[in-house]
Length: 395
Ligand code: FEO
Image 1: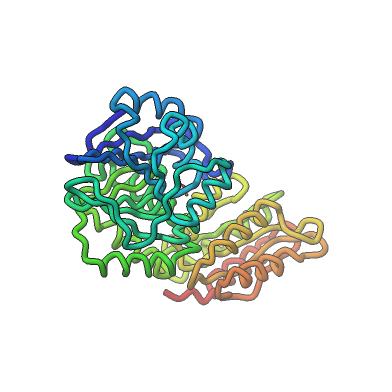
Image 2: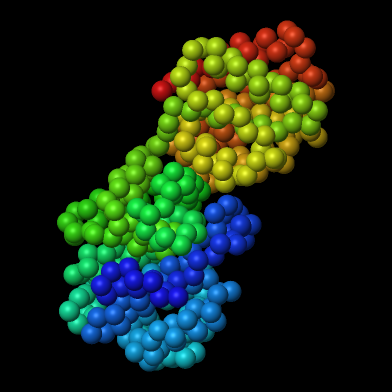
């Protein structure tokens, strides 16, 4: 369906209210998502990105209801991932000669996905195409978050089409940031940053500096997922600058899993011990096997310290805790403090294994691993309280 965004720009994407898992099963989308595609109609017509493959036929049918596909002069593929390029094969079967503008890496990715030799036109930062009265400028955004990623900027309307950057997995019918619940919007925006963009934070900072250095007026930021930022659009850019800069709030997150509640009881006592110090920090506990891993990652992203626990099983740790440690390792979070704990019956390797995992993830260890045998009695609970109290958590 075509929805007006600005004088020459319409949204022609797909709102996916049903989506609950994304990137295979890797990312939870409690609020669905949108695949934003934009039609720019000046003297010439450009289509910016498409939609995810399952919606390809619907997308092309809807486009046909609005325009003659032969009127499309340029297809811009800001990013080759399937959620944005998925309708290209269906579309380009109808208009096979239309030029496709993307980065050099974009050509490699699109060919890798679809094995088609479309009319590719590689572009780099500074290149532009004229639509008649307005121009589309291209800005490469390598590794934000794929090697092919690119932004484009529409002069005259002052719109930045930022693809995944500044996006959110957030289905809405309202489409603009000033029309939606901003608490929900920012929950989805920070979850998106924490889970997808954290490994590229250094590049985020550099790209924002480069964009701001261009001194382009920005009246709107149109990402490829979620709402369009039209009310104070640079607010999300400023927020990204903060998130990219070793972001932390006054929060301590305790993550654990448990078999017979011994490690759970340790976790609760450690939380009480931390609060006994009189800290104003929020302390939150998550049993990882029962919690959404992307939501936990978001809480860890917001935290200054992470305390992780697992009982020992087969000289190792529970798979749920191993999985979240693997996610943490890959994200490359900066300036996080951490400590490990866990219960055991006879061998007791788990706190040491978690401690090593946290070190490998680059966390600063703030206490010796705490291990207790069997289910803690009163004295052992006191030990947990004191351990929590003595953790050297800094601001
Ligand atoms: Fe929304 Fe990287 O795709």
